[in-house]
Length: 164
Ligand code: RP5
Image (cartoon, rainbow, N blue to C red; front, side, top):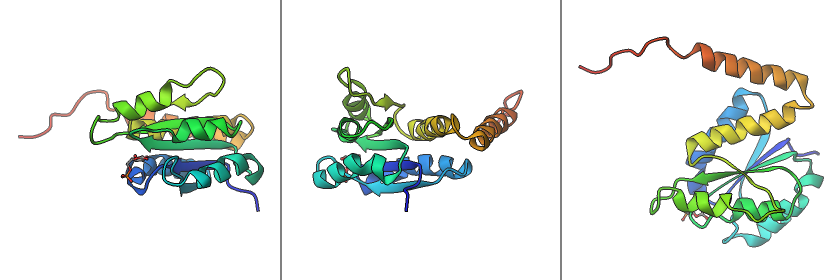
């Protein structure tokens, strides 16, 4: 059986609080995905097996979230030609600056599309993954347009006063 189009991989269970926002965004767009814990440091063999087999498994796009010394997106990208979007998870020690810098500065030849730190990056990684899939899926392109239109219509013209 073919894998769903999107793989969401993350370095730790603790990353799920961030990466669930990618999953929920894909849910909203009716894009199937598989979410897995794949650590570059703690489960390197699992990473190699996943990344080397991802295309043959049927995945089309990989979203990889990790924090701290965040090697997961880059190492995954080194072993697959699928598009890889990296999400820097906000770390406790350095607020995700370490994650961002670990992911973003890839050497020429091994691309990782790096998103913002934290929830915004996870949501946008899912939207980018959907946009890639929508290149060959008219129905999904329509759902993406509808998602954007709903976002636009949810923005009030003027701010409401809050609090006492
Ligand atoms: C990274 O180390 C993970 O991606 C996670 O963001 C970070 C901390 O992991 P835990 O110690 O919470 O498992 O590999």
